[in-house]
Length: 305
Image 1: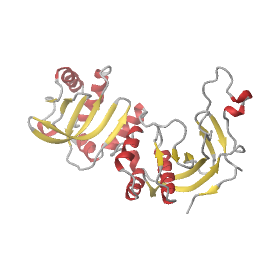
Image 2: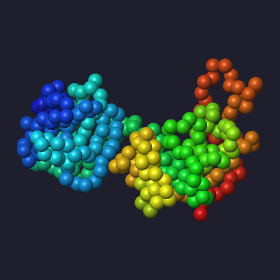
Image 3: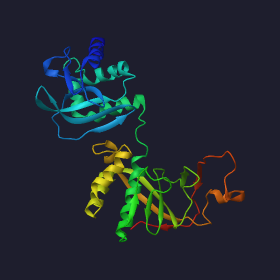
């Protein structure tokens, strides 16, 4: 293993941009390449499956891609990084990725189930890539679907792009909160403006999910929204901003919707806004507030069919 790590480190330093170098310490039957692109570097192994893979953890990425090596196209599974600072440490991860095992069993396991390899390493290193949970984004998409079903065709959904609320229409703003907790009805409000209505009425929509193979996944709802006329490029652009690009395993996780409640955020709704303080402004030197609201006992309307 140490010989393999040393070779990969050496090839990281010598492989030119848009080129691939064969890892010579591996047998031809277990071929792997060190690759370098304009924006990243890493290793690649042949991958004949048609499945799209796209996962990120820390500064590394696991993905599928067709690359040209010595004039021939190869569909490959790649492990790459944009960070040159920890190149030597990344070589250890790359060696584990390409190392075939004593009889090729590690390579077979990798190609049969790349996500299992990914989950093993992210479990060790900690996956910090996604800014929102899969069920949280699913909740936003299902609320957007409900809005479209009412006949509204003017909306704005921006994921993390827009500061205050998750979804805006011409007549109302929507803040969406989702949970996997079976009985708890608390929600976290991440800033002091999230429950401030502004010029339009504001609703907080609370979604309760459970993980279930019989439920929806993000890709399911995206497909339905596209059939209803939403632009797929627009949806995918927002999801990319959330680190949920096509091929990401989180887009395939399935959740069953147990509850969907709409709360009208009026002056009686429990919240903290600038109006909660003397002079309708936050105390000096307070620049941010995060707090938890218990929705138990607060009036709502069910959005379940």
